[in-house]
Length: 169
Image 1 (cartoon, rainbow, N blue to C red):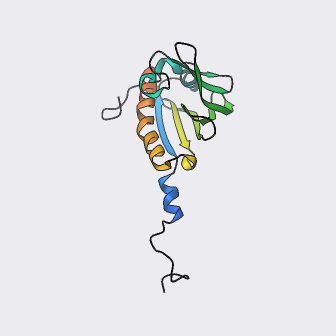
Image 2: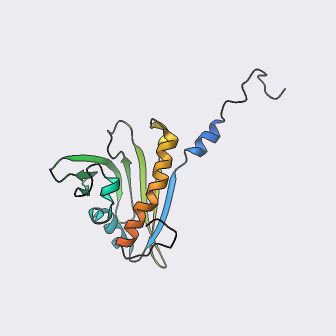
Image 3: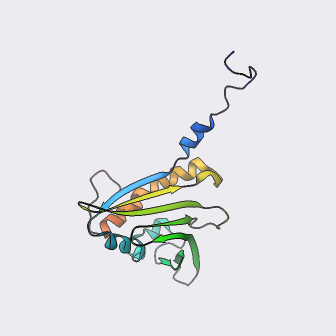
């Protein structure tokens, strides 16, 4: 007998396997400059590097900013949408926010971004988690896993860093 319950269906997925599938997306990049400069580049100047044409609700011409405890996108015509709510703000070391660009806050993921001094400048570690509430958790996670490297490559270039060949442009 393989199981305490001999009638158990062996095709039922192991919950641990499912969780591995939905683990956090973790991206790490390094930019030249101090932690203070890197944090400001990420949070105060997001509108200068974020690819709004492909990763915005209103497209090119809109403006994204960290405003008080919100991450907002504003369209050219003044419409706004909330991308997330900042619930832990520790400048210049880190922030944590809910993340739901283009959707309501009824379901959101979690985003933590941390900044740490390293020999070559500042290391930025982005951890994006909380896929379980999505309509299709695996597809949602896969989309973010594919998109974050491109988005962060834009940030690296904005900060004066170089993106290694073979990495997203």
